[in-house]
Amino acid sequence: MNDNFNEDFWWEAIDEYVVSEIMEFESNLNDYYSHLQILFIDEHDVENENSGGMRFHKSVSFDNVDELESYIGSEEVKKWKSDFKNLSSEQKSIQHETALYVSNENGYEFLTSLILTKINFMETLSVDCDECWDSVLFFDSTPIDNDDDWVRVCNNCK
Ligand SMILES: [Zn+2]
Image (tube, rainbow, N blue to C red; front, side):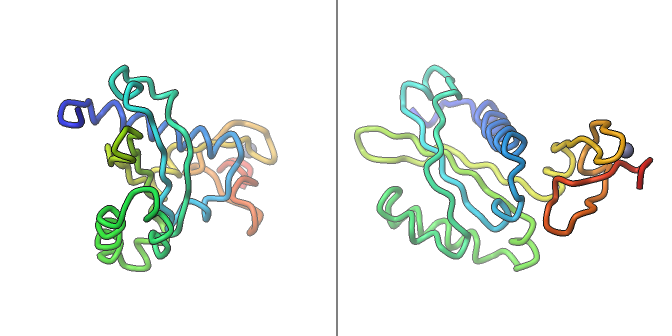
């Protein structure tokens, strides 16, 4: 079944899942950078392209993918390790990856994954300016609180 699924559809669905999650909880982006997030989905939801069936399973740092072995198996863990081994620490610090695994009678099978970088987040996330309350993209605003990426001012109020 995994041979003829629409990968673009699932990349878009993952992107939407991650971004809306971050927006809703005003999540700390440092919890995303250098982290691999695993989502599960049932086989029939893949067949019906029901992205609402995606559910959060676990998020681990790139250095701790071993923690996923009991779910996705040692071969998958090996694959992730070799992927992340090739990243510089600079790259790791601005990169997030979300992988989608299909739950079926054989356990969990890899379907696809999406990498999102700091640039993707800056161009997608928005917040209300702390001064004038206009909605601005992260890209077009400046954080004014070192501990909180979500307190920002627009370029006019800077
Ligand atoms: Zn403003």
